[in-house]
Length: 502
Image (cartoon, rainbow, N blue to C red; front, side, top):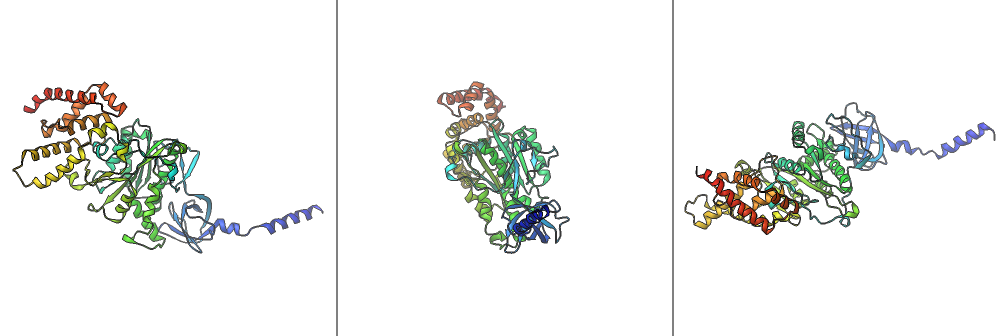
């Protein structure tokens, strides 16, 4: 066989073995585009959740599979896209870069930097959607995740690996609780991820400034899909945040992730679903809106040492309208999480901040993870406050009260005073234990109501360092330590009581 015959035989063999479907399957054509949705023909082997690339450089995610076309949501501008534009499969699920380099940075829903501090160098990527860890790989939640907020750590404690919902109307301090919790993780070896969904860009910038001011940016990551971004970015942002958190969790680290807020996330998903012509259900949300949040929040857990030993604690935020916790999305997320912190308008406007409603707030896990010192000193706090709220309602029109009722009301007022806490001032465990011990044991009964808060803070500052170190390091309040606090309080009271009479 001469050389030309050999070439012909090779070409003939290649032509016979050529699979004509390959090009058709890997590249498709846009047949319709608008409102951030592209309908594409020709991607016969596309997979749900797969990342695709348009000829303009914009990426998209396949979120709808039909018999003869696929629906792709655009992760960028649709400028330049038109009927006939080509689309290529990437063969991989939508993913984000993960790694230590993200710490201290602000990124968008695709993990790309948006803080103007240059590129982020990472070596690993993780898919944004991932099946939650199974029962075998999970461990019971039994380590405290201190928020530094007295009312929460005392009555609605949160453990590492728990999912605790923060719920309330707009402007009641939901984000403030999340920020204070992040600030309190300084020196706790915890990575904090704040996911902003549908917030104003100025709000996210202000939040970053707060974290920077208090040195919290050294262990924090901000994932931002602002109101200016499209519904697709707002939809994938929390999943991207969870993927970044799972990287650290698999390394044996503890992670705190805040989703602010999932109400806007559900609205973004409803927008996508209606544009993809899916059937609307209750309140026009699609039927799988429960699964939307359950598959996200189930990823928060505490892993056994064999699977990395890390944990991811989730603080989802839900905004209610006129305090209606029985609406569709609030009831969904309440049933997914391990408890909720309910913030009330009336308390907020009355100056009780954080405005936590003790009656409706609950933690289904945290008691097992609560610090012993706080557990011991906060024992009767919830019952005393419930009794106070009840008596307050019944006695607001009455002036003739018996001595026991008056004492219970005075005690309740003092408890409410010590639970008031300014923004960005989280409390360490020792301070919480000291204040709770003084308040729940009735040791503040003779302190004027308007001076209670300042008095307990000043008293805590006056205690010897050795005692505070012991409480902080052991997490317990021994009988000897309690006696020391009681004696020191009486002495301190004598020193400052002269100023009360003045």
